[in-house]
Image (tube, rainbow over all chains, first blue to last red; front, top):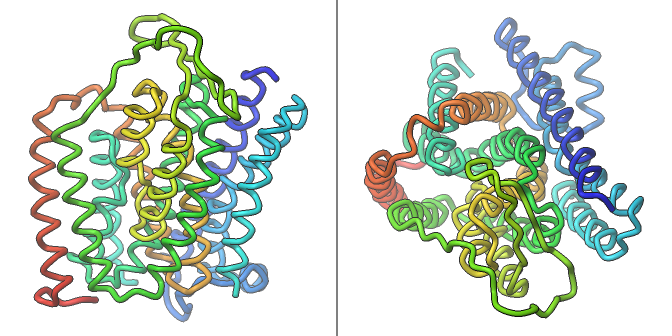
Length: 112
Length: 281
């Protein structure tokens, strides 16, 4: 596979993830600064984040930004996996899948 | 969190990001002592916040390095298998370890950082004679050096040693909330034969995924304080962005030597905290 297309996919995912997650955190911080009282400062589960967003909880917006940022390197591995699969680079497809599996283990460890 | 505290944290975070990028360090080495010694946060909460800062800065820098073609993505992903496993182990140890021990471990890391800043070992790329034996993976890399405008190509050697060291760097990242570049960059350069610029870019590329594996564990165990974490991430990220635009101003050894002395002083404070002379948060 061409080096160029792998680089391009990876770069686009990194840029998009960074812009979206950092802006979400900034918006959450601004909302929190405007209305700082009555919210519990905890890391929420995905379900609680969705619920909090509908209630206008600024902590939910901040946690969403943190989760999106955490998800960005993960999305980058998936993008590379796609590029390797398209280029039929079997060994690197395997490597990407192993990295994804280890991340899954980490997520499961954190969730329990 | 009250406004004065928030302002204090964001100022330290911006300085951490700025200094980090000027000195070629991550922000974690500065922000974690600041959060624990100045603002009295529990060290695990400081580490959780720092890991998110590591993801933010490495993602920002990685997209730039990938565009420049400096990053060896294939090598990075092979080594990530080791760094992510290490990061999980480090994070699990940290969430069950008491703060004093972590403070001492961080102090040791600072001393190593100070040593590295003064020594700065670098191996200049020397092509090996004859045809080399290929390993399991073809990890050959190339990039165009912007200074000389020449294409630099290199083979990657000693992948087994690189994997072992990367696992160690991963443990350090999960345990102490740092990027681990202080280990990965010299290993890739000195042992594996990767030119310095490519080693730095590839190390940075790996940090996001490595920190992610540790961060989800801190998040799940409730060591991720959202407001603090977001302030640290945004601050370190902005500082690093400013730093990367002014990096040409401060490449001299003077700043590095000065900062090495500061790191030794901070290490001593972390030791004092570790043995209970300075109060813990």
